[in-house]
Length: 471
Ligand code: ATP
Ligand code: MG
Image 1: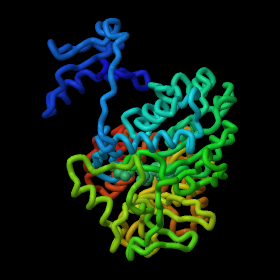
Image 2: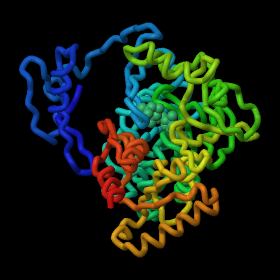
Image 3: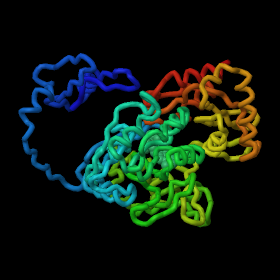
Image 4: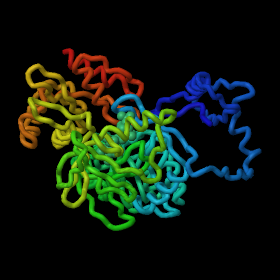
């Protein structure tokens, strides 16, 4: 099933030529293709295969389609990870376990009730969209909103106008989207009646404290961070307010969700870290709870090797993220295990430096990478997007800001964490799901080939960086 086209930021994106090409390449070709003509683009129809929904709708309107009974372990779908750290992995999901996990998460984690409305701003092509635009709300008896468009068109108030119009009770988005809204007029957050909305959930990337505070204060609603992966299909860490009212802490997604035995392990020895605030790899003891991946599609060996054998001496699932746990059991995610840089013998997480830089009032968004340096091994290099884009052409203002930002880092983390340079760009290179592509930025800074860029959203973002670095 497909359509003639979609639309993004006012631009028509034709689907049919992409679909035809995909079918041409595939080994298993469908007998029929059902197409919705949205009147956005002309479609070339293949005789005998392509059917128009508008011609068949009336004819089948009252058809009853019986349930297809399958085993609980029957695969429901394969979905690829975002490709932030490398080649995306094909996550194979079951049917029964996934249904149980989602059904339980709606009341327990999202506090949604049958009859209410869920608004998840993700894309149905990503795991958050699969789980919380489609299956989760519908299994939980909720209405779901599928919105095609940017959060800034026609203006930065569009989402909140939908909340008012459809009396949304639960909303789910990503930090990257909130950082986009930060560049808009904050008055747009309070123009609509948001009294139906209970909370805004965010996931997908570390939620820095300045961004969380900005949106929480702007909306006057609780912001609930939740940490998970395409592999798990639903949250690993959060606060389960539907089970027991649990206060959130800024900067922490919360505690281990029921079903997940989350541990922090020493990456060198595999030993469990039991003291508060020790930094380790976030790992999950097997068996994983319902909903998590069954295997990597078509490659059981890769599944075992990638996820279950990287911690020495133990067969545990590695998330490849660093974390700490405080004395109250709240986890803090410190970034990915490959986002650590070594400056003159000091190990620093790029996320800590980013968090510190985001504290500067002029900064909307920032990426920090480690770049090879003859003297120090590596140095930190920062690329920031300003809330006020017009400053980009004002060289003296940028120089002043660079100095100020370096001071902010000096004061919060110390001089070793100070970036060698802070550069300013209009956009940062991201995956299509809105995650920073630090590995590509790092490659460009070191004059290396950034490799496979097919998961990148806007290729011009990387060109800007490469121009700056060469200049
Ligand atoms: P790939 O695995 O292909 O490199 P990816 O890890 O970006 O891509 P996803 O499954 O979409 O693919 O993202 C999961 C990762 O996103 C987590 O491992 C973590 O690094 C990050 N993440 C998700 N939610 C949060 C959160 N609330 N706080 C911090 N990090 C998060
Ligand atoms: Mg991953």
